[in-house]
Image (tube, rainbow, N blue to C red; front, side, top):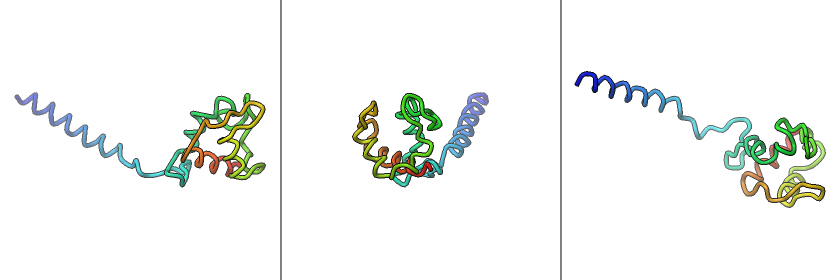
Length: 109
């Protein structure tokens, strides 16, 4: 019986420690956009990095490291939403994620 109590106490203690460490889900990082707390970098990595590179360096698609110095946020938003002739498909990102990525990319100068 003592062994069972020690085991339960250990499990309970571990749950408390892990629960305390896992909090903070409401905090946003500097990569987060004001658009609903969307992590624009994460969305970019999942949807754009295959063609534009994980570090915005360009691969099959053009480099985006300085795209904010070339295009406005609205222009970037329009290209992501509607695509661009030459291989950029539209509609890969939508809604708040689209807004967040367009804003994030527009800050790359």
